[in-house]
Length: 250
Ligand code: PGA
Image (cartoon, rainbow, N blue to C red):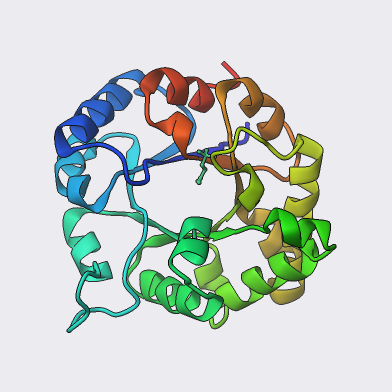
C-alpha cells in the first residue's frame, strides 16, 4: 500500500506553549499512522516542539531558512541552527515567501542546495497565480520553478527532495483545485522531472498537493495517481482538522 506524506505548515501561528500542546496531541493521536507526517511550527517553537516529537513518528520541519551557512545576516536562521535543533525537513519557496518577500527561483535554489548539503529534506513549493493560469502560462511557470529550483541537484540528491504543488489561488481561500486539475499539474511536473532525470526518478518523486486541503477533500485528492501527499496550512492548526486528513482513508 502506498505511503502518503502529509505535512502541516503552521505558518505564523501559535505561541510556544500552544505549539507544544498541539504537538503532544498529535503525537498521541497519530501514534499508529502508516503515513509519513511532518509538522512545521514557527522558528520560535522549534526547540520546544523538537523535545515533544523526538523519537516519535512525527518529523520536525522548518518553514524557511536563510541562504547562507552563517555570518552577518540579520534576521536569518541558518541550516546549521535548524540541524542543531533536530529539524529534518525545510519548506522552501512557499508562495508566501515568493510573493510577499520577493524570493526568486535563484534564491530558493541556493537554499535548496544548502539544505541538501547538510542533510535536510527540502520541500520545494511551486505554484501558479490565478492570473498566470488564466493567461495560459501554467506550464511555463511551473516548469521554470521546477527546473530553476532544482538547478545543480544530481539524481542521487533528487531522491531526497519533495515537491509541493500549491496553486496560489487555492491557498487559504477555501478554493481547491479539482482533483483532476491538480493531478494534471502533478503529471506535468513528472514530465519535467522525467526530462531532467529520467522516467524512473520522476515516477519515484513524492509530489504533495497544497491549497485548502481539508478532511472532506483529502481522500479524493489522495486517490489521484500522481498525488502523493498534502501540504496543509489552516487545517493543520487543530488536531480535529489535521488528524482526519492524515487518516483520510481510515
Ligand atoms: P492552506 O495552506 O491549507 O491554508 O490553504 C496551504 C499552504 O500554504 O501550505
